Length: 315
Ligand code: 8YV
Image (cartoon, rainbow, N blue to C red; front, side, top):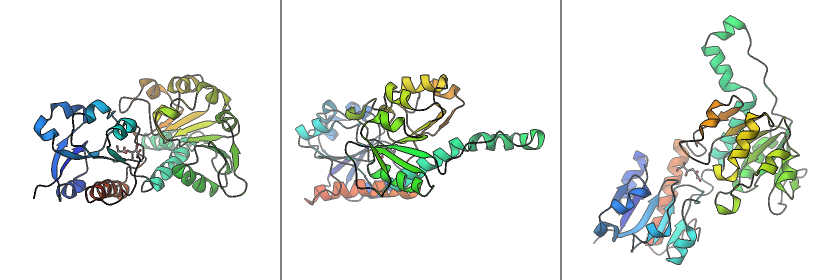
C-alpha cells in the first residue's frame, strides 16, 4: 500500500518527526520558499502539508502541489496562508486553536509584569554588582488594581482578561459587539475609546488583512502619556511606525511586545529604546503546548485522510 505523502514545511521539534513518519511518506523542506526547488514528481504526490512558518503560502505555491488536499497550520493564526486561494482549489485549511490559549495569556501577563516592575533592568542591576555598589534600583510602577484594555476579546483575550481580573484590575475591552462577560467589564465600541480608558492595553486581535494597522496612529494617540501597550497577537495589528514614534517621543510610557511586523529581523529602532520589554515571538513556546499543537496539526491531517470531520477547520 502506498502511503500518503506529507510535506512538512518548517523546522519541527524532534518529537514531532516520528509521528509524521507514522503512516506517511514524509518529505521535508525548511521554508515554503524552497517549494519550487523540490522535484516536480515529488511535489505531484503531496496530499497534505504540515505548515509551520509565517512566510506567505499563496495560490501560486499551492499550484505547485496539484494533488494537495489539506494544509494543516501549526499555530492558531493562519494569516500566512491564503485561505481564499485554498478554498478556490478545494484545499482544506486547519489551525491549532485553544491548545495555546493558556501559554499566550501567561506570557501577556508576564510581559506586563516584567515591563512595569523593571524586571529585566533590575536583574541586570544585580548582575552588574550595582546593588552592592549603588543600592536599590529606581522604583517600578504598579500593575495590580489599574485599568486594562483588551483589544479583541476572543479566546486568548478572554484568558488574559480572566487572569488580570485576579490582579484586581478594572477590565475594559473592545470587540465588534459586547460579549457575555462577568459584571463590571466595560465594552468599548471603538478602539480609540478603549485606548483612552486604560493604563495598560493588550492587543489580542486575530492577524490578517482585516486587522492590519487596527491599532492605528489615532488609537495610539488616544492612549495616555502614562499608558503601556502590549502585543501578543501579530505585529501587523499595530501601525508600527506610529508606535515607534510614540515610544521614541515618550508620548506613551512603554511597550511589551512579543510580535513585530517583520520577524525575526525586527525594526532596529526597537533595539535602541529603553521603554520596551521585547520577546522573540514566544507566546506558545513551551514544550507542553508545542507538543499539543503538533498533535492537533497531525490529528487534522489524519482525520481528513480517513474521511472524518476535521477537528479545527478554518474553511
Ligand atoms: C506560531 C503563533 O505558530 O499560534 C500562532 O498563531 O503565532 C505561534 O504559535 C509559532 O511561533 C510557530 O510558528
